[in-house]
Image (tube, rainbow over all chains, first blue to last red; front, top):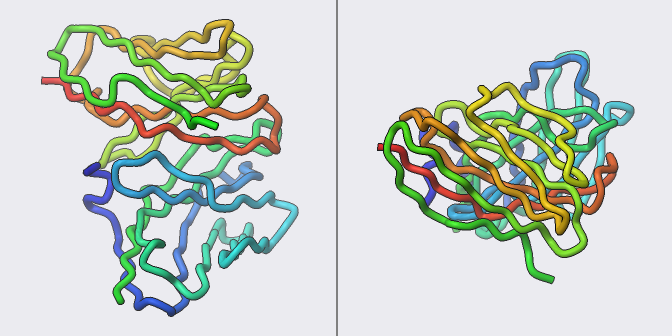
Length: 113
Length: 114
C-alpha cells in the first residue's frame, strides 16, 4: 500500500464512538477549507468543505468546525464505522479558486470493532 | 461514469532522466490539477490547468511542467530527475474551474527515482 500513513499522528476509536480530528492551518488569508479522506492505494476523497463566513457545516455523519481566531479546524465523525479507517487531511485555499493549495500532514484514523 | 485515471500507476526511473505522467479527467471535466505527495512534505499543489491554460502554479522548480490538451487530458513532465522527486503524483479533475466545483482525485502514479 501507500506510505502516506508513516509518521502520522494516529487516532484510535471504537466502532460506534464519535471521532474528532483536529487541524491547524497556517495562512490567515485562507478562506476556504476542505477535509479529505485517503484510503490506502487511493487518491484523496472529498468529505466536506467550509468557507470562512461559516463556523460550522454539517454533512452526512460529519461536521466541520472552523475557528478563525486560532486558525483551527476540526472534523467530527458520528458513529464511526470500520470503513472510516483512513488518513484524513485538512486543506486550505481560497474561495475564488475553489481548490486546496496547502494540505496538512494528515491524521490516521483507526476504527476498532 | 469513469473516475479520474492516471497512467502509469508505477514508474521507476534513475537520476537525471525525465518522466511524463498522464491524467485523464472525468468525462466532461475541464479543469485538471496536479499534486505531489510525500511522507515528509505531505500533499503539495503543483499546478492547475483549465482549457489548455495554466491557471495557477505551486512552489516547485521549473523542472516540473505540465500541459493540457483540447480533450482535457493532461500530462505532467519532470526533467532531470532527483532522488527527492520520488513521490506519489496525484491528478484531480473538476467540472469547470468554479469555486463551487468539487475536485475528484485519481489513484496516483507512484514514481521512484533511483
